[in-house]
Length: 299
Image (cartoon, rainbow, N blue to C red; front, side, top):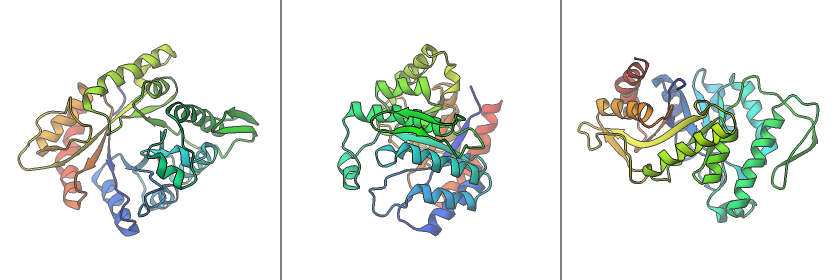
């Protein structure tokens, strides 16, 4: 398994520049490997994340950024690829691109986006992956994609100066197969129950093998809602129940749960979503959980 990474979800509402800036800087100071930002353009009080990523990249030096996930129906893949390449260049390679097929279709349509069937939404992701990789490629001109996202005799560029990971957030069999075949990683959707995730992992691995890939090259990120408490009500990593059920554990409990997610569940990334995003919770993870969890996993 590759090196384990620990990330933190940063809420973008309310649209308070100073608050978001401070949350990201505190995550960087705490030693998190990345911050994850949602892309819900139809939420009135949520900042647009491509512009926000540029601002946050200029305000930080080390921490990485994960789009969790870009709302593909509202973002033409070719332009999203150019934005991502620009952010890669400006940040020094600190962006991973998470892609989602879309949800809340009425709200997407309210902003001029399409209303897609599940089959159409999946095909759009397939085409987006092809188009984005082509934009980042070395060909003099390229034609790629299809009905939803396409390039026609396009000149690629700018080229990223670092490899940009494409991560897929999805749960259906077609999306899991696509992840194993073509993506660099999987963001396990928080909306799926924990008992469904082992089979999803297995399907991704099978698709990777069938495509001649090493399954270990496909990063797996579990998303966990929770908080550090003084008396644990959660004593082990959840194996069943809603994906957004809160994990409430002591610092030692969190260390054990993170290690369990990695060693027994097969994840190499943990994205923490705090129940209540406070400076105190971030500091407790900084001092009491992250260093110890990393030490155990390296041992």
